[in-house]
Each structure stands twice: as structure tokens, then as C-alpha cells.
Image (spheres, rainbow, N blue to C red):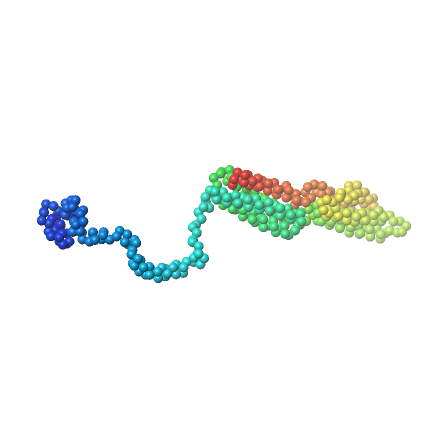
Length: 365
């Protein structure tokens, strides 16, 4: 029931606490509560029994119990504490009983540590960039499979380092650096394409266009010329006599000259880059003398051999033109095309990429 300060209510509470009914009807319990005597110990004891008796206990008796009570509590709590410890050790995963659980690392997104991570990734990128170029250069010089393996591994690590830098770029606030990152990725893609092309031709005949021309064009032409010389000479010998040698002598000398041309040209073309000058047998003057000799003996040769002599003249012109192209390649910087591509296509791209990374390093990545 709601509380109301009436005489009946006061008598109800007084009867409940064993007090006689209040004779003074002019003063209710509320009035007395507001009076000064309500705060006396006697009144408190009369109105609210046991209030003062509780207060007479020592203030810190519950906090610091007596030694006997403390001993009883200790022996009661000791088994419980042991059981709780066993349960705790059992439930913890292996490896976590000795060391407290480490809090999750949230400092990876902080400024100083982020700068350290970017700097480490940048250093790794520059190191792998240099390692890939050194390994590729070693492969070009030695054609060793070990260098090729190192180049492949360094290339894979270089791409991973670029991916790490791209991940860090999510925290960058420098617009210039973000634009340069896009440019660096484009240069790296082009660089990788060029290095793969260089490595692909390093161990093949395509590395030396001059050697390719000799093997694919000149050697077959000279072999055909040798076969024609044998046929023409046999036709001349069939109608010759000891009294009249006729064109057999000059044509036999021509056949020997062609054999010398094939050997000397092969030695020159397949020799290292530091080979000597072009052979005299491949000079313009030598080819002019051969054509003149073939034209002179044609009319004296048997009729069935004249078409073959005409074919020999065509082969001479073809061989001379191809040999001069080889000589031009040998004198220029495109003789070793793998080395040429490395110097003219790979190195400039590598320098551009390194300049961007070095600029980041100096400005503080």
C-alpha cells in the first residue's frame, strides 16, 4: 500500500516494532523523524530495532575477519582453488599455459611503423631488381643454367616486392608518389617482357642474326654450288682430252675457291665477337673474278652444263649479298642481338625504374 503519514499508519508501524500507540496525536512519526531526538541512539534503537546493534560491530570486521574465521575460510577455499586451477590448465590450448595471450597488433597502421615497413619493402625491391639484372647479365655472358635459375628466382621475388609496395600504397597520402607507383608498375611489366625475350634467345642461334643468316641461307647456297660444280666439271671431263684441257682447269680452280670460301666464311661467322677481319675470299674483288671466269667458260662448256653455270652465277650473287649483310652486322652493335637488346632495351627501362625507387628512398618512403 502507498505510504501516507497518517495517525493510523504511524500506529501500525509502532505496533509492528513493539511500541505503545502514540498519545500525542499532534505529532506524527514523520514529524518525529524530522526532529532532533530521532537521531539519538535510543530513538534509533526504539524505532528501528537492531540498527544500532549492527553498527556496534567493528567497522572492518568483514574485511579483516578474526584469525580463527580466516583459518576456517582458508581451509574451505583451498580445495576449491585447486580444482579451479586444474580446470583452467585443462581448458587452455597447448602452448598458452606458460605465457599470457598477446594482444592483437594494431600498430601496423601507425605512422612510424608503416614508414619502416615501406622502407623495408623498398630496400627489398631495389635488391631484387639488381639481383635479377646481374643474374640475367651472367646468363648472357656464360649461358650457364645456374645464372638462368637465379634470374628466374630473382624475377619472382621482384614481382612480390612490387606487390608489397602496392599494398603499402593504400596508406600513402602523396599524390605524386601514387602516380609514380602506377608508372613504376607499367615500366616493370615492360621490363619483364623484354628480359624474357632476351633470355629466350640467349641460348639459340637467333641470338646472332649473322650466324643465323649463314646457317640458314649461305650454307645451303654454297652446298648447292658445290654440287653444281661437281656436275659441270664431270660434264667437261666427259668431252675433254689430254691434248686440250680447255675450261676444265679454270673451272677446277673455281671449285676449289668455292670450298675455301665456305670454310673461311664459316670460321669468320661462328668465331667469337673479337674475330679478325672478313676473309679475302669473301671480298667484292674475289666475287667479281669468279663471275668473270664463269662467263668465260660458259661458251666452252658442254651445252647440258650451261644452265648449271648460269645457276652458279645466281648463287654467287646471292651468297655475296648475304655475306655483306653478315659483315655489316659483325661491324655493328647488333651482332649479339641478346646483348644489344639488353643494353638498348632492358637497361634503359631498368634505370627508369631504379630512378623512381631511389627517389622514394631519398624522400623517405
